[in-house]
Amino acid sequence: MKPVRRVMPALLLSLFAGATASTAGAAQFTGVVVFGDSLSDAGYYRPFLAGLGLPANVVSTLGRFTTNPGPVWSELVSQYYGFTGTASNVAGGNIFAQGGATVATNSPSTPPGFAQRPVSTQIGEYLARNGGVADSGALHTVWAGGNDFLNGFTQLSQGQITQAQFQTQFLGAAAAEIQQVGRLYAAGARYVAVFTLPDIGITPFALAAGPTAAATATAAAAGYNTTLFTGLASAGLRPIPVDVFSLLAEIRGNAAAYGFTNLTGIACGPFPPITTSGNSQFCLGSNLVAAGADQTYLFADGVHPTSGAHRIIGNFVTSLIEGPTSYSLLAESPLRTRAAHVATLQEGLTLGERAEQGKITAFAGSTGGDFDIDAVGGSTGMTSSNRAISVGFTMKASEAVTVGVGLGKAKADASFGNEGGGYRTDELAYSAFAAMKSGGFYANGAATMASLDFKEMRRNVTLGQVKRTTTANTSGSNASFFLNGGYDFAIGNFQVGPTASWTSQNVEVNGFDEAGGGVAGLRMASQKRRSEVGSFGVRASWDFGGVIPYAKWTVDKERENGERLVTATPLTMAASGSSYDLPAYSLDSSYTTLTVGVRGVIGGWLGYGVNYSKLSGRSGTAEDYVGGTVSIRF
Image (cartoon, rainbow, N blue to C red; front, side, top):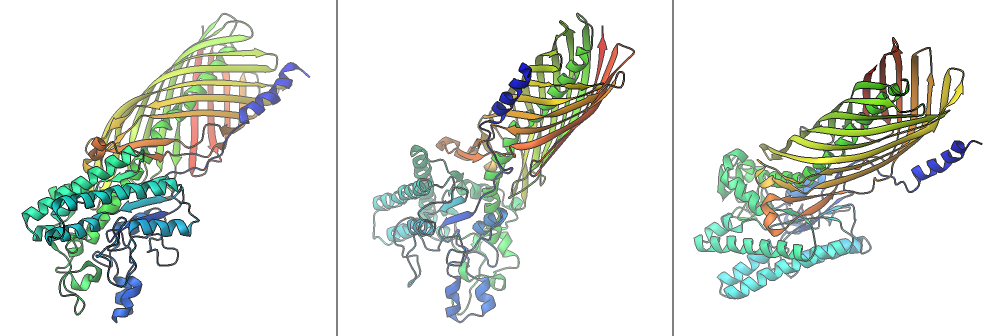
C-alpha cells in the first residue's frame, strides 16, 4: 500500500473525532413558566367564580385582572412560543401567578378563604412538581412586588407603620425577590425574565390619593427597581430585564401613537350585584365604560392594565428575546461568504495548475447563492443573498507545486423573517494559497484574513400598534484556513477517488448600540463564532480533451457547534449593568455538499470553469451556490 493510502484513514478519523451534534433553531423554549401576582394571573380564581351563581359562559370569560376576555401578557408570550398559557391550578398549567400574591409573605390582598401563595410558594409548587429541578430549556418569568407596595402603602396611610418602616419593609421584598430568582437559577433554570415594577404613581389608584401619594409611589417603585436589579447583578445573576417602568413612561409620552385616549380613568364599569365600581376581575365587554375602552384606556381599574396594554407588554418581552437571537446571525453570514470566496480560489488554483512551469496565470471569478433559515418556535428566521468576487494570480513554481495570492470582495444581503429587519455585510479578504500534486495525490490550502463591515442593520419592533425600526452599524473580522487533500485513481481519462478537507474560521463581530428603538433599544456585546468543518467524500472527473466535467460529494461535520451565547443589555437598564445571555442560532452539525461543474481551456491560454453547489441535510435551512471563473495564462 502506498504511504498516502495509509495516511487517509487516519486523516478521516481526525476530521470527525469529537464532533458534536446540534439541532437547528433559536429561542425554542421547552415551556413558559410564570410566577407573580395579578399582573400575570391567567385565571387562577376562575374555578371559584362558579360559586357566585354566574352563568357558565360568563365564568369562562372572566378570571383575569384585565378587560376580559382579552389575554394578559403571560398568555400572549406563552402562545408566541407555542404553548397554551393556563393557570397552574388547571391540568398542565404553568402560569403560577395569583392575584394578591406578594414576594415572600402572607398578603391581606389575597381574598379570604384562598391559599396564601406568594412567589416563594409558587416556585416551591413548581419545583415540587418537577422533582426539585427547574426546566433548563424553559423561559421562566418573575413579576412581583406590586402587592408588597400596596399592602405597605395602606399601612403607611393608616398610620400603622412609619415611612422608615415602610421603606425597610418594601425594599426587603426586593431582596426577597433576588433570593427567589437565585433559587430558580440554583434549581437549573437558564432563561429567567425579571420585570421591574411599573410606575405605580401614574395609576388611577395613586392619582386618586393625591399628588403627594403619587410621588411617593413613583419614588418607591424606582427604589425597588434599583435595589432589585443592582442586587441581581451583584449576585452574579443575569436575567432578562423587562423594564416596564420605562415602557409605561414611553406610552404616556406618546399615548396617541399607541392608540390610548385615556391614561388616568378606568375602562371597567360596575358588575352588579357583585361590584358597584370598576373591578378588572369582573370586567368584560358588556360593562366597559365606553365601546373599545379595552384598547383605548391604559388601565382597566385602579392598578391593572387593559388587554390593549397587556398586548404591548407581551410584544416588549418577545422583542427582548428575539432581538439578540436575530443578531446572532451576524456571525453566521461571514461563514457562508467565506465558503464562496474559497470555492473561487480553488477553481483559480486548479486552472493555474495546468500552466507550464514558471508561468503566471491570472484569474477572476464570482460565486453567488442563497442561505435561508426557516422561522420556527417563535424565532424570525432569515433569508440571505450572498455574492463573492475574487481575483488573483497563480504561478506554477515546479511540476508539483503551484502558489498564488488573491483578493476577494464579498457581500451578503440578509432579511429577518416576518419582516423583522435585516442587515448587509461587506467583506474585503486577502488570501495566500498553494497546491501540490504528485501522481494521484493532491493537496491544497488557503489562508485568508478579512475585514467585515455590517451596514444598514435594522430591527423592526412591534409594540401594540406602534412599529419602529432600530438602526445600527458595526465592524468585525474573519480569519480562516482551508486544507484539502485526496487521491485520484486514473482509469483512462476518468479519475475518481476519496477527498477530505478541513475548514477553520474565526469570526468576530464588534458590539454596537441600536438607535431609534426607544425603550426597546438594545446594546449588543461583541460576538465570536468559531467554526471547524471536517469533510470527507468522493470526487470524479472525465477529461474529454480539454473539457473536464467533474462532480464532488462530501459528508460534512461542524465540530464547533456547541452552544454559543449572545449578550444584550436594554439601553434603559445599562446603568444597572443588567446584561443577559441568550443562545445564538445553532444549525445542524451534519450535512452534505454536492458540487457539479465543468472546466476547460480554450486556445491553450484561456481557462474557464462553472459550477453549482448545494448543501443538504440541515433541518430548516436551504443553501446553494453558482460560480464561474476565467483565467489567462501569461
